[in-house]
Image 1: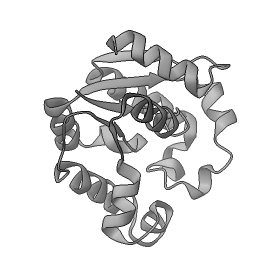
Image 2 (image 1 turned 135 degrees about the vertical axis):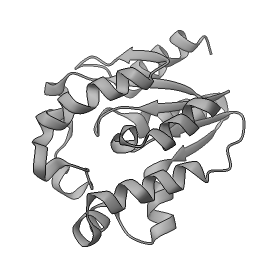
Image 3 (image 1 turned 90 degrees about the vertical axis):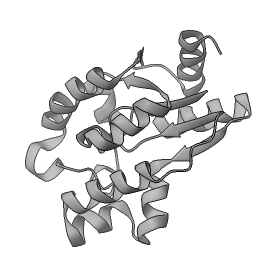
Image 4 (image 1 turned 180 degrees about the horizontal axis):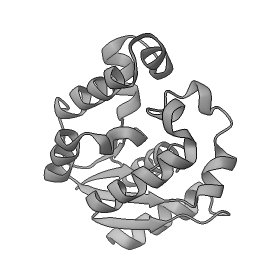
Length: 166
């Protein structure tokens, strides 16, 4: 089984994905790291130097050229849902799990927002992005995991395991 985690920056995709992969003995893939490795630049550097569109293209390219293997957990960047091509690739190869986190919780988790390389942040602000992306996440999700304000990483991992019967 290949599981892809989607959601807002700060939703816990990388933390939960890494922990879940470790528990299951699965490979862990962080698509933000793929973009950084492929481009040789940090996400915020790509946004600053080349713009949001360049980051979206780099993200899409890194995803659609992945060599996917069974028993993998993929943590995506929050902007992956802007690429229908990337999402269709992931949907065709994996089970999509949306980590749905209340806006207030996202705000409290993102102390490094201006250095994370968040697509659309300058134009729309965090709340605007949250509103815009929520519908996209829901449209691609096979499963939705509600992440509460007090949930720790293991709580999220256990919710995913229960939902997917792992």
